[in-house]
Length: 291
Image (cartoon, rainbow, N blue to C red; front, side, top):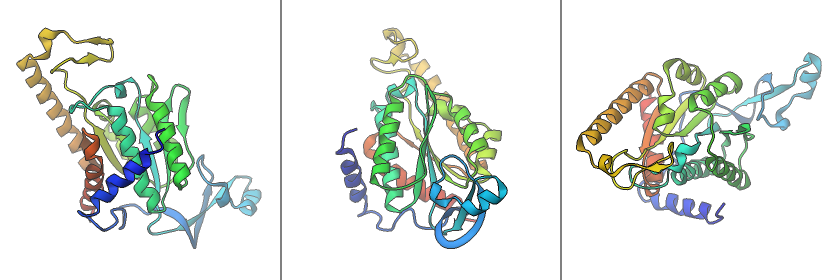
């Protein structure tokens, strides 16, 4: 990990302050989130990722189950980053930039803002050895650790389909969260109505779609066949028009599905646009979820 990376993210965020001075994380989300305060709420069974500091040992010994104390906090959120990965992220965007570099920048930017807001956050990715799930906590060291873990994951060729990963989250992580999904067109294609219904029943969900390169253009490399495309196909106007129409249709279908489940999403193609797109995502989510 480049240790100047966070400094560059911080500088990019500070450049945005002349456009918007208020904290974009302030305000209520559509769900009620658990945090740490002096107001005790209730007990629930321990799930992986919980802090051992919250275990109620007395109640646990009486029931024979490990129980966690929960507290009410209006503005402290539990935030889960879901990082899509696999060989597809070794490709470029439609602007000719690295998809993996943008994915890492998105995680770094949002986690920096979240950390500055003192929220607890975690990262879940799919690796060739199973799911990699960090603990929910905050701090600069935690932030750097998540970036290192995601960078390592992005360098792997293999990753489970995004839909399968989200189904695992819906079935196994029983806490109210804000979920940020970093993915691409292939990942969005794996989502369906039933899955999103399960995922959003307790959680707020936001999606950052990293745009894929077009199949037509100059010097295109096919990641699946590991070969460059034939020259006679690269500038075929009909093929390009068909691809544009197909992409627009996919996007329209995704937007309709997201609207149904009150999911906010943005598309990003360039690293220089990440901060603007993240702020747009937060503002869109707040506006779209106003009752």
